[in-house]
Length: 404
Image 1 (cartoon, rainbow, N blue to C red):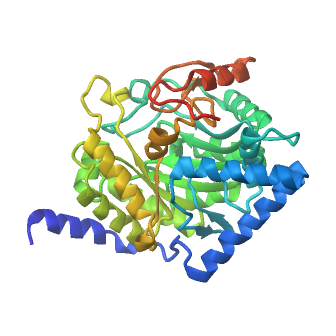
Image 2 (image 1 turned 180 degrees about the vertical axis):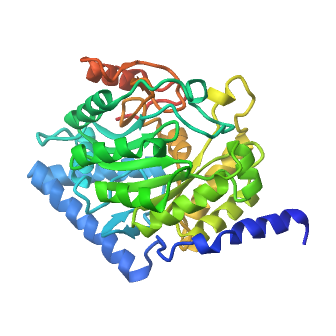
Image 3 (image 1 turned 180 degrees about the horizontal axis):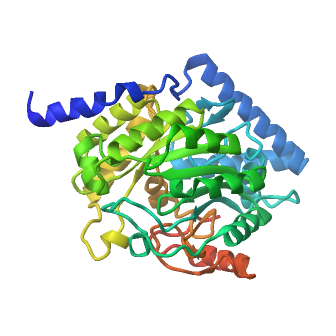
């Protein structure tokens, strides 16, 4: 066994004492069949409630089928996880039987065929609540803003969350910087605004202790996305510029699972890691940890990567897409659900940039997504909704906008 293989095995087995007994494994067989078809039935009931016409519903179902085929080809929902009584099949969509799923469903139907029921304007909003972070991540998109004086304090954060909920936002995700450096602020915001949206945290794992996990869960947190950019502890620590980054991420996963929070890993692929061998080893670790989701990200030449030749080539992008399809097939149904935003962006168009989501940076300014790095206006201004609508028309610049 060579030294590289030994490091792989050590990383896969590391910190066994920090493995949670709770695993978010995809449902199987008859149970999955029942959950998926029960939800289809509920969606059908909602269609008749909204449109009140058999012929309109039939026409809309045809449209949904065609859109779904254009969006994901012949792929079917093969993986569903259950967390704390809710069912999830996509990372950025509310749980099927959660109180926030209705707002998402009604908004999507309204895009296909307008109706008179109230709908949400946004599916997701990412709110960077702090400039502070002790890490020096290789790919950090907020690199030029890190550890500068904070701009968003309680008053500004209240305004932002309130406005997002006024227009209807299904999911609000706290990011940074490292959001776990502002636990008290997140706790306060969820206690104040928790009923209007599902709340998530995007973290490196730094400062994500058992105590903080419990506080955030009790305040209403739904899920946690933990950044883990390599299955090898040494390589991940190097990528993150912090000696304990791998250990912190593993601990965060455990505590998130222990408190029944939807748990995902997020990995930024590079020219060195966008290959099948790396991805299979990464998914093996993810399965071992027991997370429900894994999210693949492409590197973008912004922030710490600005001006660098870091973009993946065509073969690497094809490898990502093929691996995404493979991992979500029947053969790999015991592995976590794999998410690849660029897979859909290249086929269907960008659904960020005011279409279905926005990024609010550490200055309170609106951007299309964390990787666009183009300020469009302030979320603190009175005309913020006009800014979001304008963003939706112009798109993100990297991909065509989604057609609806």
